[in-house]
Image (tube, rainbow over all chains, first blue to last red; front, side, top):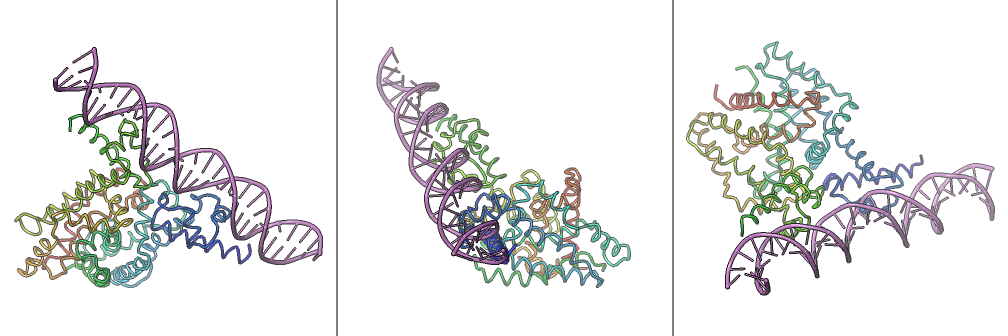
Length: 203
Length: 203
DNA sequence: AAGTGGTTTAACCAAGTGGTCAAAAGTAAA
DNA sequence: TTTACTTTTGACCACTTGGTTAAACCACTT
């Protein structure tokens, strides 16, 4: 495989990501992806054969850039409260830089749930590790007793959901002002961290 | 308009809702909607003229059944903690009975954000009312100082997000076992209520 | 029974879709 | 320069799609 190959392939993937992520599988046109990549439509098929193939490549990449991070971010040996703070900050930052990612992933996983099972097997992601971390902290008396699964969902919910519901939120709370939304999200890092810590710390 | 008219129109709307909500605008076929409704495809166009018209009817209905509830549920004069408890219970219950609603709404609002602005004007929904309620409680010293917008998003996030991320969650935490997920959601009502109350109540 | 109006249908169409293919253009070795 | 190859292109195709239309159907009135 020559470097030109790789180059074209990457150009295609980048363009496909751009289009698919905003418009979804059915909403995207091969022609538009080709145009975005600045190449001929036939070339898409030459490299990826079918639309589904191309989509799968993009989806896997998106999925793996979002989901496994959840676990990885908890792998360090600072205090649990620091872990939460860092996770909230980093995860929100990551989504800010990939605004459309959450909706893309959740729309597609809902449309085709079986695929998730298959993808999750590929990735070396063991949620039990994080669960154990929280259980350990509970046993040590550092945080209130709580089902770790519920806690994890709580944390992730508060980080991700505002971006899934962004248009509604913007309309409802910020008169569709993007800047206000941005400020809100920046402030949110602190707010969510405190909220969680208040909720689980022993008085 | 005869009762037969109304009947066919409702049949169409019901079928369209069924199909659109799962497959989205582009993913749905007029033929499939017609089949689901047990009628001829031309009849769809006779009643709704275009696919977009039909979709709009379905979307508005879905949107209004989900968003305005958030405000309405806070309109009573029980204690703030009771309000939160009731909201969490009712809202989760509502989504359980309309599992696909959140993803449908958020996918479409992201695909077409301008529409939200327009829709929100139609509905008599003033978020300032809820914000005032929380501000009042803060002033009275019943709950910790917190930006009410952040608090509202926190509450809604924790109720709605698990359903948006359901396939991923199911795969990650419950080995794709639907029953376990159901139990988790049932338990969640209590957990989320407590989590919020712990986070905002004065020690 | 015939007329009238809205409702339902089957056949049809134009546009757009993903995908193919053979030829052209580029590339590198002999 | 010739040969052998991969990459890129434009023309093309089969098929699906949303949408149209004219005729059939049906419930009512006269």
